Length: 259
Picture 1: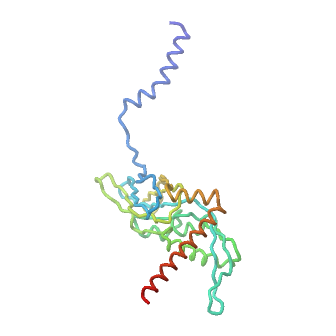
Picture 2 (picture 1 turned 60 degrees about the vertical axis):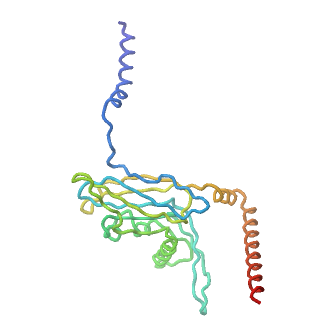
Picture 3 (picture 1 turned 135 degrees about the vertical axis):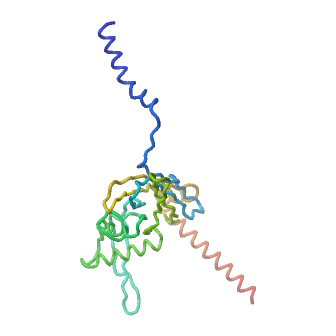
């Protein structure tokens, strides 16, 4: 056998060996994986939110914190002040680096309220930026008002102690979070993060994601609003006027019938 032939067979053996080992070795399970169900959520005409289930293996004796967050976007918030017994808009505040959705769960309720950890409202307050006619001492007040607005729409929520631990066996634990995504959720990619802790120390961080998309009438309206903003504006005004006229006619007929 020639030297070139030996070299060729050696290179071929090196290339195919990993595939042979992969085929013959038993399948391994990833204990650090985070399972998200469903992975794709569809917003249709009668969308009222979605039920979510997130699970992951947990080393025995450990605690965990789970967060679900959307992309960070720029938002505007109108500030109101009271003048002569009337509430009036007195300024516009631009908000940066705040996620469009933020949900946090913990196995131990204390984990969401204490400590210098990268989760919870304390971590969000350090990331968020407020631009407007503000005094330095007003940032904390504005952040609290921002959180209240988000909580009202159920886009920001904390669930202390709601991340459940199941003992599948003495050596296998599992965390599980069951929750309802709000109906006001926006299309896009959402990130899931799970921190594993032991005696208050973070051992590891695991990640996953899921998608929210539109279909049907909501998708058509959303596309029209983005591509044909002026036409969409006229259409929205026309529909509002038509609904108002129809409501007025029905009310008038009802009142005439009583007379």
